[in-house]
Image (tube, rainbow, N blue to C red; front, side):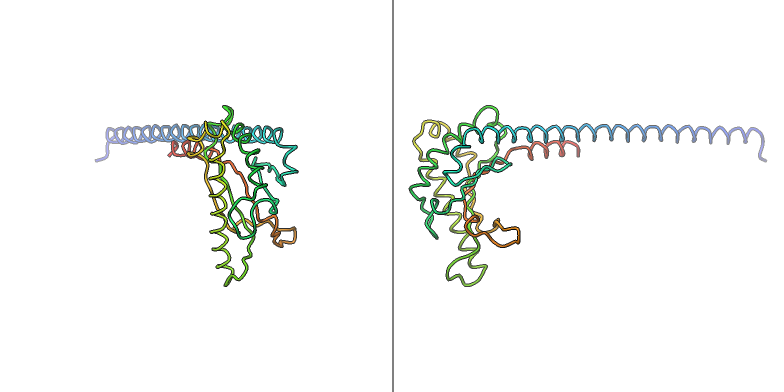
Length: 235
């Protein structure tokens, strides 16, 4: 028979279960809040890293512009917003289809590179520079190519040879800073032939062949690695 005593026990049981569920709910809510706080904290860290590197790139661009603003026009070169330097004057870089540096380009590099190296190895930037990329670019054409694929492959070999030739010339420069920083250069300076993968186009999307044949010095910072470490720490 269901008695008042049984009713009291049942009510007590449900009160206990209710208290337990409420307690668990509070714990879950607390965990959720803590998780949100941690995520927001990590997002702020990522945002701060991004801002630091954005400022660093701006400072680097400012330093490079101050150093080379008078030289860039006579070199046929430009400084991009991302602090990369592009040598566009194909008449002074290489003979068509050849990988040997022309004498005039050698003279430009001998003037440019030690000054460039002095800036990027300054204490303000040195620790952030992950890679100094020498990029070789071609147009899409190749005389007597069997097809577009054949032209691309031949241009790939040419662009790679040109960047290796450029890298070898830079390492052989006798300026004191280049020789002093050679261990750092061997750890950070790379040669990257990209064939016609990054062509330059007109507004009508027509290939600009002369401008596509170029050499670029491009910096890669360790911002991506720093952000990846933060994301990995969240997981």
